[in-house]
Amino acid sequence: MSNWWQGCGRVARRLGVVSAGIALSMALGGAARAQSYTDGYWVGTWGTAPMAYENSIDSYGGMQGVTLREIAHVSVGGSAVRVTLSNEFGKEPLTVNAAAIAVRQNGSEIAPGTSVPLLFGGRAAVVIPPGALVVSDAAALAVKPLSDVAVSLYVPSQPMTVISRHGFANQTNYEVSGNAVAAPELVGAKTFVSWDFLKDIAVKSDAEGGAVVAFGDSITDGAHSTRDANTRWPDVLAARLLGDRKTAKTGVINEGIGGNRVLHDGTGPSALERFDRDVIAQPGVKYVIVMESINDIGHAADPDPAHRYDIVTADDLIFGLTQLAERAHMHGIKVIGATLTPYVGAKYQSAEGETMRQTVNHWIRTSKEFDGVVDFDKVTTDPARAGVYLPADDSGDHLHPGDAGYKAMGDSIDLKLFAK
Image (cartoon, rainbow, N blue to C red; front, side):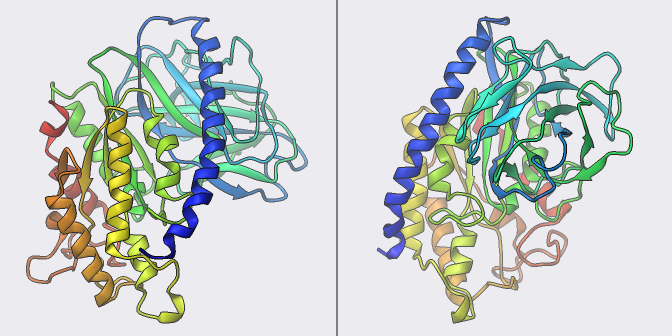
């Protein structure tokens, strides 16, 4: 085994912080359930994976408070919603003085008459401790499948050295000064393309409902797809699930982080560290599709020895992926392994790395650890050139698909995997 093992103790210590955050979420969720909508089954319809970001001097702790209006494209619909806010990476308490959710009409504009306050134990304001998250009370907003909702948060001036943010939303969001959570439109708003403090949205469903978590790196996150178009492969899968009566109540939650790795922290916590937070804790989760380790390979086998770091082997990666599968199975979650897409021609591609990729892919295809396999590599590889993207699927950097490649990936998934 490689020196990757030296970081395992650090992961275990951090899991204690995650457990504390989940415990607080459960306690607050219990208080919220006492308010209304006590009956029913909750299913994740949208989600993202926050990370730690150093706070800039003029954001959320600067001269004045701001309203953030963040847009989320839900997968399945429901008659009520619950929203999770995150301060999991914060070092100070996070105060949110007001929040609302509405149907998004266009830009920052919300559909008339749809704005509903988000309450927390019946209160409009909430203070989220460092390392924690909170779940809102149920809000009586009916949302349609594959529609956009707008979550508005008023964040007053407060000291925050680190914020919990998903840096690559690939979605235009909006910011104005002052409390404008109920405003029909945020006139003159600044725009930003991250999801800040917003973690998950769940809808009221029934026992037939369930969620698929798409767990991975930038190729799951949707890098190089068209902004605001919802053309990531998890978006394609969500639309297909909705169109089949056997899977129409199955939501999709995208927990991809660009640059993420299985065995080491870097861009976000490692997959091993964040798996409980981003997969197991999701409401109604029944399936997870795991597609990750190309960044582990790329950095460990970079063609420039000076750029190699966090050295791992294919066996190390197989062990890490096996751990994810075993942890999911302990919670009754079915695990679908997804092969790694081509990367010949990418900046950190090498012959050594390609051998590792092929080894990991062979294991994914033949392993008994998974309940199913999605062969993204086969779908996107040029039959005439091993390890190379089909030209139509390549975004141009030889690592990420473009919109056509993401569609091919999403279309290739056998829906029978989710109809058992």
